[in-house]
Amino acid sequence: MAGQRIEFVDLPVSFDRPLRLFAYIIGHSQVLFRGEQDLDAGLPTTIEILFKDVGTLSVRDHYRGLTIRLAFRTEEEQLRAVDPRPWHDWRAFILETESGSKGHVVAGAMYWAESSVPIGHSSFLIPDYDLPQFRSDRSLPAEPATVYAPFPRH
Image 1 (cartoon, rainbow, N blue to C red):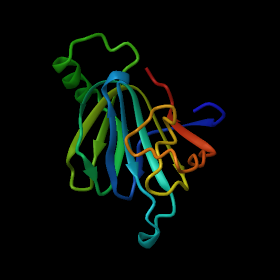
Image 2 (image 1 turned 120 degrees about the vertical axis):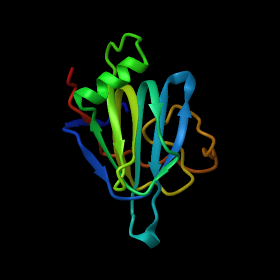
Image 3 (image 1 turned 60 degrees about the vertical axis):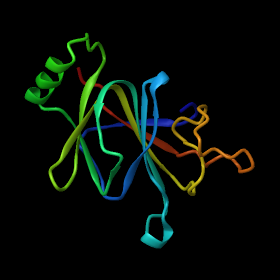
Image 4 (image 1 turned 135 degrees about the horizontal axis):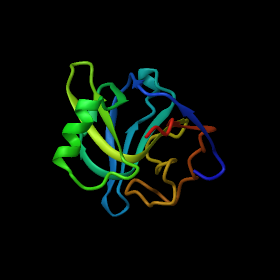
């Protein structure tokens, strides 16, 4: 994310569009969700949501819409009881759908951004990592002007 401006914002944040699990990079402890550009559906941009330094997770492979918030105290206590390792900089992010189903990602950081990249381009939030969708015969995706991250609260 070099060369991009990072703007800190409060959670919760909601994404009213389809998102899918795009990459789970175990060796780098990263999870990437992506909502692809779909001009026919009125979605002119691609959204990526990246979790870094992932400790534990319970997620679905796709969402019709998604709200991400920080865990309430009782939710965090339950997650800490299941994984008693030191959390250091981890925070518990709760993933909620309109139907009320919940998942979570315990991670050190979360970022999201929008870009006009079309389907088939590699990630713009983790461009140094060769994702399987990368095609070297295409130009690099457009860099988003702003990357968002929740305020670091401990």
